[in-house]
Image (cartoon, each protein chain N blue to C red):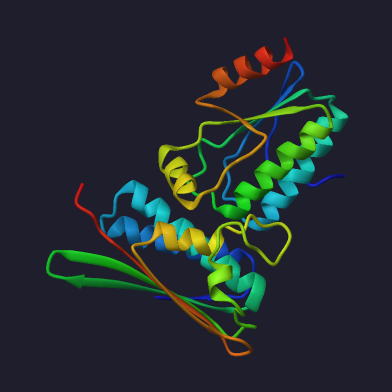
Length: 132
Length: 120
């Protein structure tokens, strides 16, 4: 599933789509909320900093294991200092708590980010379904 | 005419705002403006934002809620957020979001009690 992020309302669309997918895959209510919130943050980062990009959502299944992988991808300005960008409370814009990207890392099970100045940014984050 | 995005209920000196819509960024900003205008126009001393229907509160919505509370405070109005869903509380806590300058309550009744006790 690929969601184009270009307008502000696409942030809501992205989090709704992921919420539905997580629900269908049988994620717990807490994990549905975490994954959807993480996607909301990633989509907003695309809209704010890169103006446009994509959120890709993949369902991964192997045996009993079920996982949602979220890829956020843009050709925006890139992040100069990733370590700094991942620090809680750090932000380059006003109207922000600086907890978005670091929040995604905390909410998901795995988190990978690569960014190059002037080229773009890619974030890959995933969450496993837990038995509950 | 200001843009009204959320229904509000005036009760005594209080303004109750039940959020029952999906909060995109524009709506959150419009809601902030609407609330501040109503606090001014209706001489509101206590604001209750009921988020029990809200399933996702991300960092931007949190930011705007605390900013609204800070602005309301400057106008002499205290803010109580009530009915945060457990999964939302869990998510916000895990992200490290701290909603500062706001009182919290389980439900509307406790929110009203908190406002009454602050005024005494």
